Length: 385
Length: 248
Image 1 (cartoon, one colour):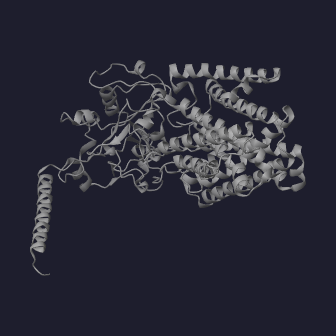
Image 2: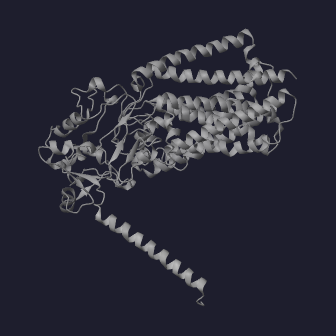
C-alpha cells in the first residue's frame, strides 16, 4: 500500500492523462445510471440478440487477462531472462483486464443488485458460476504475485521461496479462465456457431496473440514516455510469440470455416454466412468481419517475414493490426453472430447504441486507469535503482 | 464354519440387519406405489384446427399473466404466439408434400423440456424444473444475465428490456407483474393447475386445438391424441425432450 504514493506524484502529462480517463469514466458512469433507471432497453440488444458488445468485450478481455501467461511461462519454465523485467507488466495487465471483465458482466446484468446471488446460491451445473470462481481466483493470484514481487524489488530482496509455486500454479489457472469462458458458450445446444469443440483452443490462440501484441505496444509506449525500457530482445521475443499465436488462430478460424461451409449443414453455416456475406439482405457485420480478416492477413505477412518483424515500426504496426483484428472478431462478431439466425430463424440486426458504447468506453477508461497506476508504481520503484 | 457363540451371534445380527433393510425397502416401495406418480404435464397442438387470425389463446394468456404488449419488436415479451411453419420446423421444409403447411402459422411456447438447457445454465437456479415437468421462473431470484435465453434452442424466453408495467392494459391481481431486468416465459399456468384448472390458452381455444394433460397417464387426453395422431416435436435431435407436440 505504501507504494501507492508513487502514483500520486507525476508530471503534468501524467495528470492530464489520468484526468482524461476519469472524464471518460464519468461519462460512462452517467450512461450506466441512465441504463440502471430505464433498463437494458437503452442498448441495441433485443429479444433475438440478447447478448451484445458488453459480453463480447468481456470475452475479449478474458483473453487479454489470460495472456499474461505468455510472459510468465517463458520466464519461469524456460528461463527466458529477457522477460524478467516485463513479467510484472503482464501481471498488472492481467489484473486490469480481469477487473474490466467483471465490470463488463456487471453492466450487462438486468438486476445488478442481485449479482451476488451467484455466490449465495452456488450452482455447480452452471458454467457462469465456474467462470466467476476462475476469474476471481485469477485476480487474487495475480494481485498476490505482483504485489510480493514489486515489494521485494523495492526492498532489494529476492522473492520469497513460496512465491514460485504460486506463480507456477497461475499458469494452468490462466489457461483455465479462458477455457471456462469458452465453455460458457460452447455447451449450448441451439447455438451452432459456438457449438464447436475448437472454441476453447481458438479463444486461447487469439488470447495469446492479442495479449502479447498489446504488451508490445505498451512496452513501446513506456519506452517513449518513461524511463522504462523493456529491452529490444524482450520485444523481439514477444513478436515471435504473437507470430506463432496469430498463425494458429488464423489456422483455427480456417478449420471452422471449412467444416461449416463445406458440410453445408444449414445451422452450422448460417451464422458464418451471416458474418461474411450477410443473410436475408442484412449484413451489418460483413464490413467488420472483412476488415478483421484483412487486418489479420496484413499482420501475418508482417509477422512471418523475419526482416519485417525485426523492424520495430513494422512490429508496432503488426501489433496494432493483430489487436484490432481480434478485437473486431472476438470483441464483437463472434458473440453477436451466435444469435443469428435466431432459434425461430429470424435475422435480427444488432447495433450498439451511443450510451451502450459510452459505457464500454467507461469500462475501458477504468481499465486504463488501473493499468496506469500500477505501471507508474512499478516504473517508479525501478527508477529508484 | 464352526458354530461358536461368537459366530452364532454374528449370524443372528447379520440376518436381522438384512431382514430390517429388506423390510424398510418394502415399506418405502409400498408407500411409493400408493402415492400417485408425479405427472408430466404436456400439450399437443392440433394446428390444423387453428382458425386463421384467431388469437384467443394469446389473449387469454396475456390477461392471465399480465404479459405486456410492447410495440417495439426488439423489446417484445411473448409467452405463446404464432410463427410461420418454416421457422418452427426449419429442418422439415414443406416444399413438395404438404405445401399447405408453408406459410401457415403455428403456435409456439415454452416446450417444458424434460432435459431443459435453460435450467442447466442458470447460475442462481432462478429457473428450474419441477417434479411435474414444468420449467418455472423465479422473478425475484433472476439476476437478468440472460444466459437461459442463449441456452434455449427454441427462442421461448423473453427479457424485460424496459419496465413492462406501462404496457399491461388491465393488470390481473391474481398474478404478479414483472419488473425490468428479469426473464420470463410460459409457465403452463402452474398457478391454474394448482387450482385444478386447465391452462388459460387451452380453456380459451374455441376449436379445442390445444390438448393438455399428463403425459405419464395413458388415459389422459394428450396421450389419447398422441396415440391416434402422429405428434412431432421441435428439434428432438437436441435431446431436450420437449413436452409440446404438434399433431400432423
